[in-house]
Image (cartoon, rainbow, N blue to C red; front, side):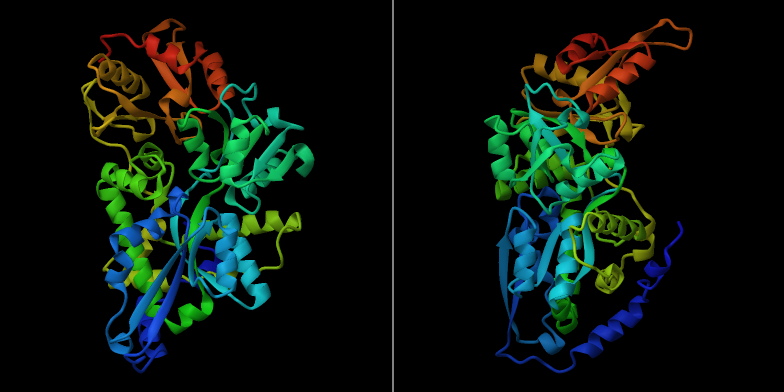
Length: 486
């Protein structure tokens, strides 16, 4: 992988970082010193939970805070300040009430630019989660809406939280299609207001960030018609710190990133239990948490600041600047990977190897219906039995066969998941469109029905048309599954 010139500047040896960190704050702070740490979180933004609510509830930050050397006998006062969106967190950082904050890609740019303009500089010090192709942000319509894709929303009233990652996604979607900003009647609404207005038919569509484009359909009143994966551009959530705080207390920033790494490991170790705990703490349904952070999840937990994420942020900034939506911003010095490098080094982890990796948590295991292991995670599925565990399946067809089999046994399906054939993101099976049937190379109907899931209706229609199949709903796809599928 080619590393951009500016990214090479970030590749500072860990040994030098440790020397720098130790040399910086020489001398004890004193037993009467209390260090105030304001941490700006977004509990209901699923991609930030391992940087916020998980640390808070498991006490992981306290586990890693330095207590030797100059920090011997100091007291820590932690203030966890939750928000449903990024702008209040940026305001808190500018007022120095928050020293560590977390937010999505476009809000990160506003945060960095605002800090530079107001002399309250921040720095990007780690990533929490990412999707390499933009998955996660999305646009939803009412479940019975006649609209099925972005083009249908011309002239319609659409809302989105302005300044959010979803807002940036929607601006990018218009630019990609050569459409003007007034393509739709766009208004700013928070997730809570947008959700209510969508239910009450006061708006035609609502764009939002994680987890709302999955959460609202899961709750039964919305349908997703656009996902950020259609942009094919990375999306991410990251951690920013006030620059002055990082310079004064570098060991605390390193401690925070160590805690983040442990929180990520906790989520991966037992994703079902982790999703259940996150639901308990945030009230976001566990099945929705799981679709993002479980095996095959839409987002990957990884704190490394990869060169391609920096390139994506530069492109995001350029898009905002063209629309005159952000002030001048020097992005390169805003990015500081010395803390995450030091955290990796102190934990005995290989940061350079992590920079090269895009490995997430693939679906794996034995399919109990089709009696075979999951060999192609991108075609696999999962079923979460209510009150039970999550079972993997080797294909969409085997997943739907599992739904039928479990239901026949009287088991209640909490959620069934399949993988979108075109976009590569995980979907709720009952929210997907399907292309079913098909012909073999000789043009004859296949002996076993092919069942291919898609988020978007037109993708399913196109696939069906090209492969001799037909567009089907979830119910129709279930009906097409033979009882003896193996």
